Length: 380
Image 1 (cartoon, rainbow, N blue to C red):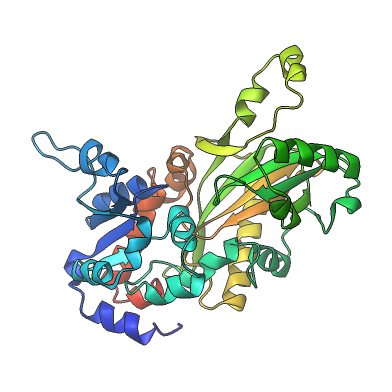
Image 2: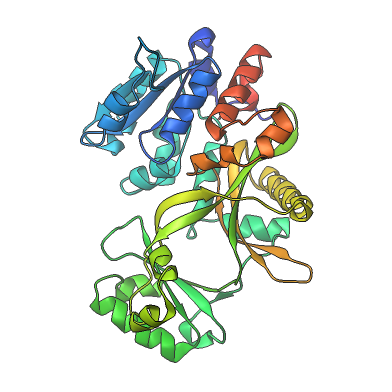
């Protein structure tokens, strides 16, 4: 077991362990965390930004007569980045907070702070390995591609420059107007890259500077599936919590058009902005491959940054044609996934005898660790 950071250990020693509170940023998957905490008998707290609070303070706030809602308490900040204010941090510590990082936490805070600053200034204990969050960023050392390579997980071939393109590729460039989003486009050769780039620059979707840092990777053809895993240090086991696929604008709208109308929109840029998720399932013949890939990834993180991944993570994959069919992993999430729909796939019920959401599974692990005096094994 890797010892806790001394400051975090000191903070945890002062907690009332009968009043532990799961806390997350009010976006992405906060309701899943709040509901899961309640189901496991823990308190919850959501930190949100002014103008975005009604979901938590009104629509899903806990009320009685009759019992309804799941959010116990909400803190409303002027900006999400105020989370790192020492006074806010002290207030969270006073409420015995264990923080659950989601993608919104990374995105909003990283607009102002480096990952070093985020890790240092977050004084509350994290559920999971706080140091692995940065591995999602492609410009960080020991990032997700390094981890996948160490794990022997297949991912799309990457091209260093547009001149190298010799097959269908997806170009992932920073969005010109939304700093934390990416723009995507498909091309087959350098000429198509040049033509599509100029169209998107003219439309204000990408910039020339952004294209210089764009990721160009082979486009894997097949259905997409997010494998939402959970690694339990307490049990020493990997679980498949559920599987889902994404709904994206305007990609899903274009897919639904009759062929003739789709041809008329051939120059329409594909947006692929996140809109939601749909529960999906795997054939049982693919489960063994999924677990094998997940276990390899866990071992790679344990070697790269002990104690490695703790709790939820996702390998976002395409299933490509065979025989035999196989996974190609195009993205990794090293924290709670954004899809609450994973509970509506059967995999947690096969394991636990009932449907368990990702938020509840996190809360279950916290309760088991608390009761066994092993919180140090699941927190950083």
